Image (cartoon, rainbow, N blue to C red):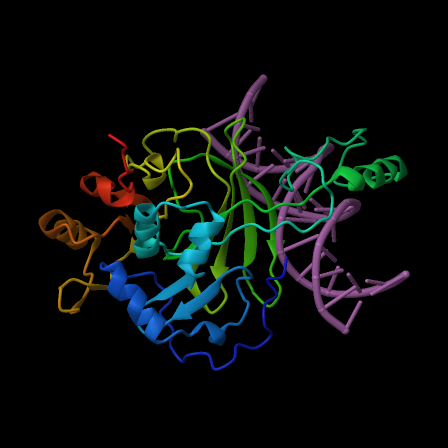
Length: 304
DNA sequence: CGCTTTTGACCCGCGC
DNA sequence: GCGCGGGTCAAAAGCG
């Protein structure tokens, strides 16, 4: 991993408002492109660059490159990807083994040859580890990340997650939590951490692709956006909106401020403004407007 | 009792 | 080669 956090942000904006926004993705992207502020936080996100302007904060990689990396070849899908991506990153192979690909996780690595227990390893374990090194290959699955203004760290997204680790992050007062999907054969992982520059913002990073559907309705009764993405990773996550966020509501580029979730939902229903998902700031629940599912699931080109 | 979270130790890659 | 930091493991503790 190379996501070293710079000790001091260079030319950091005085008051960044790190929120993903923009009801019109094209204009959102163009406005960001006009003022790429990624060099404010160079390499902070490793595979990501970070773009911040007054209204938004987006983790991004070049969408075409990313589309290639995650295997979007169709122009139509690529277009959709480009329009609606919040942040994507792709995995990189970092070792030299020519064995078959495996991700660096307990599910994929050979199990320890003994179970001496604990997080510790005794001499026997160390020996077996040396053997394992020869066949071990470290690969990152495709990842995407997004930032959400939320009071709760772990946003409910319709899947069940088991926390398997927590680490202090260098130069950040906030720890990073590691979650793994509880589905038996699913290898999707997720990292959750608070943005060190703005503690009200949560950075969520998904890695991998669910091989199953969601557990259904969440406890709050909201549909997960991932429910409709469950079979295809190569689709972007929705953008998240919260009270106070600025969204472009007019064709002329006019910007409004979201007053409340209900107000936003109203706007979604009435104008089909392109808002894809709403993150309830206090509960952290992601609410899906089912009328907009088609905006998320790009129509697949059909031969017939 | 089964599942989840916590937590300290260990592994691994990378930069110096 | 060594140290640092991110990522993971797995026993113990917590919880419903």
